[in-house]
Length: 598
Image 1 (cartoon, rainbow, N blue to C red):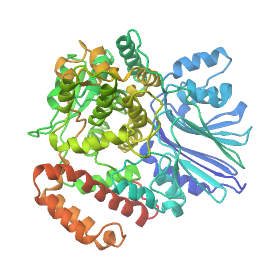
Image 2 (cartoon, rainbow, N blue to C red; image 1 turned 120 degrees about the vertical axis):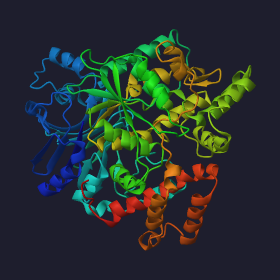
Image 3 (cartoon, helix red, strand yellow; image 1 turned 90 degrees about the vertical axis):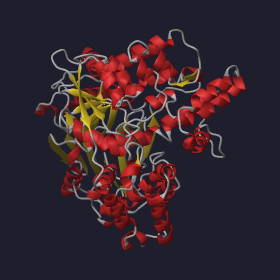
């Protein structure tokens, strides 16, 4: 896992080495174990290394394949690199290291851009092909690893994070006003190629971009075609064994691997299937809130205790004070304002992870594959109305227990959007509305934003996060199954519950509500110290002069939030979080110019 950056002056003028070095310095948090630059006239590559596989200096980057004229800066892990290496050696490839980085180089030399579909893993990379005089940018199937780029006056630069581009080219700090307006209306960020910077674009997942002196050619390499919904014999067994193998592959590491353990279905499934090293227990990390009604620690303990002696759990008690400054750090590592979605708790969990391990397994992706969110209930019920109404009333009543009544109207609106029941409907390759909603969640509104958060929060503390549920074999299986495998008999994530019965504790399998690494943010924001910080931030002249917020409306909203009843506060906290993080983003990236390293 690393930070990557590069500059190609396609006009032919030499690369500014100092600009490239500034890009590298801005990414130090992503790779504190080493730094490397490769500059050859008009082309420059940079890498910050987090050493996970073959941590010796032999794995330093940028890495070359001299006989083929290839140079690579690479961020990620190819989890099936052992199998690919054997295949490449059978073709005559000779290896100098034990790294997956060198496997990427030899794979490209053997198969060209077709190599990327052979990879099982997560990656973002820049590869210079001197023979073809082309720069190849590639990103994994789901965008687990970030990659952004900017083109201006013949110069192309790319990096793991926009802040690295700003460090070299501060003229790129111009805000994207359309993206800001969409965010303030409640839209998810990371739904397409746009970032919050007008001339910085995000490379789409499952895409290879080949850049030559005169052209850019984008190509989608993932050959999976959605649309087929077929009952499959032994689907539960196939699901269980694919998930087990996905976890096994993601345990490959030359440094210790830990796991996030929220007590929910996904993290508990990973804990049930993982095989920790025989000589030591596996470190797990979970939140603990004394006295909070949504504390999940008893479920985390149940999951860990179900395999005696295999885990040691580290309990994380996030502080409530200094919330605005914590949000400032979160914004800096996201390069963007953010929705609230679990970030406060996740920040402190990753901080604790960094004290013990460099790699952590996490359950991201399970809800998007298996309809774990309440907003998927409506498209499912519409499908049932149109196909099979038997027992529907009872099932609808059971599914309604997923959320409190105060949130049902909000979730209904979100479900309508997810189901494509709107004028600008998303891609709909499936017969069922539920599978269409899940496909949209995977590709556009939902998972991309979750993965941005996962990468930003883990790399803030130089942690590599691995997501077994996003093994492409498991994803392809889930998107080939009928919608009734995802929700059935009043239960979301049905196939997961059925396939892991007897492995995951029954108390966890019987959980209905999705919480994740949540935090009592609404209560925290109403504490006197935090209220004071929020008012000082949002009612400052610098904020008001941007033309984004109206002072009178802000004061009314803040007063209502501070004094309103609990249901009102819970609903409004998410909107207030967005306002705060937007202003912090302006201060950190627009006002300040090139952002300082943190």
